[in-house]
Image (cartoon, rainbow, N blue to C red; front, top):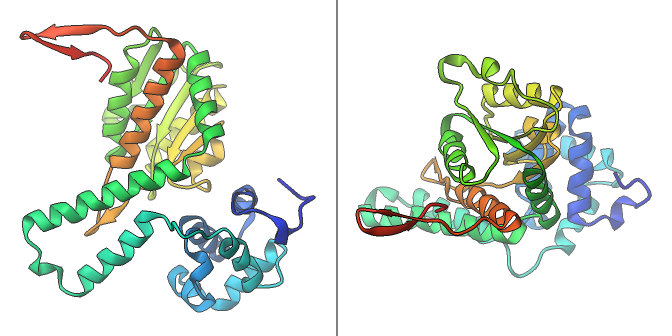
Length: 296
């Protein structure tokens, strides 16, 4: 925490860090506001208190209580932190979300199949741009350090995150480390992690609403002395609270369907950075006369 810094002097990142540290002690209403503040940081400086309250499903007085809880005189003073940090380059995905909302409200039924594809791909591109802009360098470096220094890497991801976990299992098999994928098949996830030991590293991937089995595996692994790398959508997620390091990524939702583009890009970046750190040799393999890189 940064108790020696007056709330009015905090940067956006410092304020969000303080909010995440106190998240568990907040009331249910204040938790809703905390998540909204984190997820809408890019244009919170432009949102009035009534709009924030409506989006959180609370009364404006709750927003005032939230601001005062963190030492501000009211919402306007808290909002100034975000307004001061607001640049001309508002995150592309936020602009995209506003535009796609207008498209839907105006009658998306008239969109052709290729127009729908263009909208979905546009959202994915915007999400990648946001990830590139917001990715925490220190957190990413720490994640690579943890993976480089361990001999055993566990990977856990369920439901929509399972494909990301499987990719990491495939990619990390190209290192000399022991790679263990927790598939949770047959609800055997707890049994699959009984051999987790201190010094192991587990990568857990989950997004709201968080997969119960992934959270359980991560918590048990930490209890056994493993270090947790969380790939999740919030510093306030149950995975982030248990993690040695949390890599926060938020994929866009287009027409109600969430993309996995940003999450997969983050997973691939993590492997490539680790491969560079370990100086993995280029080992092409020939299949049917075509040369392919085994690490792609």
